[in-house]
Image (cartoon, rainbow, N blue to C red):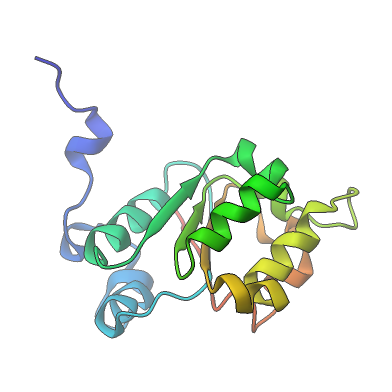
Length: 165
């Protein structure tokens, strides 16, 4: 009989089980408030690997079973402008898309030629966003300063939180 991986066995099952990160899960924590109000905005969680970004997302998914969460592998993000992937977004209006380890997608256009980010920006709050009505939860393991400034704009990603060790 196979056992669960250690990470799954020790993963917190409630906000009270999470050690540290009180700014996110404490009495006035952002994640706690999100759960209480039932609304999930566009969000960014960033920090070193192993700090709990995926744990927070799994917990949000567990508490919002009435919402459609769609997880996109980072390799799919290279095709974000393809007709077939855009049709997934159009066919799944109001879904919440989880983009883990998406630092390449969100990387600053000043550092590299990154045409994909324009499509993502349009999907997150541009004209396309008004059609697909989706939200994004993005995680990455790089510093926030490496991410395109347009992503960090106040109206685009409502919540930006560094998950610390």
